[in-house]
Structures are given as C-alpha cells and as structure tokens.
Image (tube, rainbow, N blue to C red; front, side, top):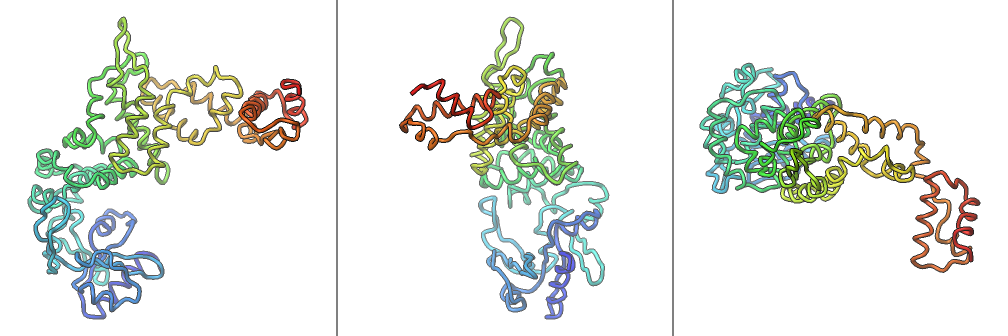
Length: 442
C-alpha cells in the first residue's frame, strides 16, 4: 500500500470504531496543490487511550497533547485528538490542552492553508477558515488574529516565511505586519527550533526568496545580525559588479536554489557555506588607495561561521564542513600555480566537491569568472583517483626493515616519499627504497 492508502486505512479503522477522523494539515494543502505530501497526519475525536486500544503498534509521543504515532507496516502516522490549546505562557507550547471539537481544533492551527481537513471516504474538503480560497490567491494568512497566533508559538513567524518562499506565495498584509511587530520575540523559543526552520528555508527550494522575506519581516536582523551587517559594504566593481556583500549573498542563494530545483535536495553544509562564505567581510573591509580589500575574511569567516552554526545548534559535522568551505572558498584561485603534489592533495581533500560547487556559485554571483573552477574540474577529470589518492609506496615497517629506528624522522621520510610520489618522481616501491637510500644513506 502507498502512504496515502495506509493513512486512509487508519481513518477507516477509526471510523469503524465510531470515531470521526480526517486527514489534516499540510497533506491536505499539498493534495489541493497537486503535490505529493511528505507525510499524512490524521485528526480524530478518539482520545489517546482509545487510539492505543484500536491499533496494536503505537508510540505515545505527546499524550498530554493528544498525539499518538500509529505504526502501520513499519510506517508511522501521527494521529492527534481534536484539541483546544490553553494559554501559551512561553511562546512555545500551551500550558495545557483540553480535547475539543473538530471546529475548535481547526481554529487553533497556524495558517489557513494548513487549516483544512479532508474526508477521503466522502472525497470532501472541510474548510472553515478560507484555506482553499487563500491557496487560489497564493496567500499565507494566519488563522484568526495573527498576533495571537504568533504569541502562541513564535516559530510560526519563520514558518510563514518558509511557506511563502517554498510555495511562491505572498504573506497576507495583516500577517506580514504582525511578524514585523513581533520579530524580536522569536528568540523566546529555542535556537535549535530556529535553526531547524532556517535550514529548511535554505535547503527546500527558494532560499533567496526566503532570506529576502526574513529581511523584509525584520526577522533577519534578529536571527542573523552578522548578515544584516553586510548591507552597504561595498565591493570592488571589477570583481563584484552586482553590488554590496548582502546583494552578493542573496545572489548566491539564488544560484543555490537552482541546484535544489534540479536535484532532490542540496546538503545542509553547502547551503550554509553559500550563506556564510563572506560573513567576515564587514569586519575585514579596508580602503587602501581607492581599493577595497577584505584581507583575512576567509579565515575569520570560518571562525564566525562556527559561532553562528553553534548558536543555531547545528551538528558538529555540519559546522566543521562549513568552516572548511568558508576558509578555503578562494583557495582554488591558486590551483594553476600549485606544484603537482600540492594540487593533488588539494583535489583529494574531503569536501572538495562541495567546495568547488561553492566556488562556482560564488563566481556566478559575481563577475562570472569560472576559469579556476573549470581548471580544477578539468584536473580532477585528468588525474585518476589512484593518482590523487595513491597507496603509500612505503610504510613505517618498511623503514624499520631498512634499519631506521621509529621516531620523528619517520614522519619526515614518509612525507617526503609521498611528496615525490605525487610529483611523479617515483612510482614503485623499489624506486621509493632507492630514493630513501640515496637521501638518507645509512
């Protein structure tokens, strides 16, 4: 069975036991937009304990909020009891909930386009909030008073931006103004939740539009003051005819989105690499004799990127890779001057594919000079994998057999052998032994 068929079977089972049950939220929105939903959520009048009695495999993930995961053929389906939320005292979650009617459950939801339910048995959309009309008008509109909706959960402000960007919608005027007014309060919720939402904005489609909306809604200056600082920081028109650092960064996000539209999804590290590759330019800008320079911005930018990504509670693997991308995003310009051994090491580094993709996007967002990118890609194609990552010709045990004692000299000799091997001076074990004998006569 498909995911949809399994979800409908859950609904049928609840109906057989006498309970109202419907598909709810984002899957209904996607269905009406003729998109395949990522998941299928179900809303029902059945209480959590009843749901657990009806289905043999369940996980209580939020019993206090009426949420049970039903496991069907290995797939989880979120089944939530109709509820009315009590007051939100912390801008994150209700202090308490009470089970309620379908209408009350709909009215507590965030946006009209997410506030519809669908009866798959009768093939009927239940729309009490004008969600279908707003889909047609391509609007993201809060249900009821937007200020109240955002006071309930501050993350909804960023979610409005994400939906508008990914769907190509406009944020309704009253909803938009409410976000602008309450933008500073988004820090009342955890940085991890903010980071998760920002990551989705970056990786799920229209990253440039998403960050333009973050800027227009005033969320950007709260979440990313370092990016706000890019505005008005001029660059050399020879290298950056597009404008200041902020404009350049938006353009990189635009090219990033083109990748996302061509492929399934871009990596989190490449997305943040594009966003943060010039993050230190405002701190490093200098004007020298009519020239604008940003010496050291790559190194300082790597440090700043780590600080930002730690703030957003991204994983260590992500911020380590992003630091590599930011620190080395100009290194490819030196590739034509590198010794062969140095070039091979560079092109063999872990993360090189993402680094070169960042350099391509960076160039396309500036003066379009792709010479160095194409040079590196050509060299990668010319050099076999074995040449970039050759097996060592000698190891420590070989040096011991030749009469050397373990110590600091080991590392020096093995490094020099690797260098000669990458340069093409030696190619066999026998040549390596001769080279060591000649260089370090015993």
